[in-house]
Length: 79
Image (cartoon, rainbow, N blue to C red; front, side, top):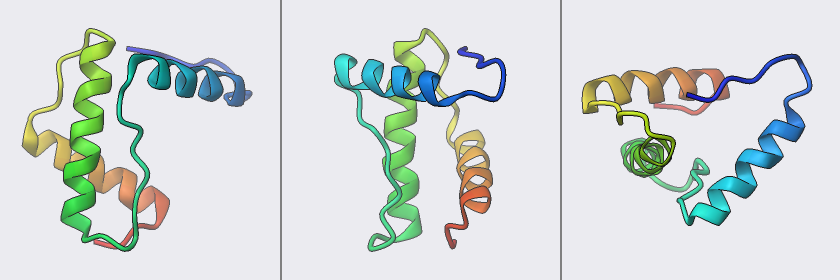
């Protein structure tokens, strides 16, 4: 798993964005025009791709829902 040190994350974020594009992975962006559950499924697909790309085991569905709900709360997405 990737770990970022320090407060200057922007270069790391830019690097990760480039890596995602180069690998052909799906970048998740929450779409407020879609149902919360549709966004959850879209995020899960993108997250599985990213985790597999980095050699990590994808979350099981129940764990993925917990992670997504936490991210959603942190970002102010409604459920």
